[in-house]
Length: 119
Image (cartoon, rainbow, N blue to C red):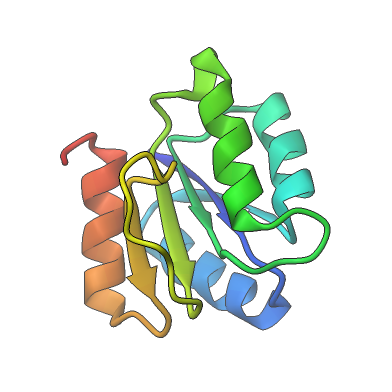
């Protein structure tokens, strides 16, 4: 069973995706911002991080940056799921980006692919 860390400041969205992903057989933990996410990662490294981009306390950009700075976490895939436009540049710190609202099947396919380690 793959483990996923969901990071978003919208509680209803966290609850909905938690329900959907656990129903698909994933183990899911939740965090409301990047700082909470880093604490969750310190406790247990997930197979995938799914994060929003715009959040209070620590945003998705800073979360991605801090994850990528740690050699032990460099291989953890990151999926950005956001309504914010993102710059398309190399070295961005995430593996995939889906714009909200992403179609559920696309979201689940992307999650499965990233968990399995396929590009």
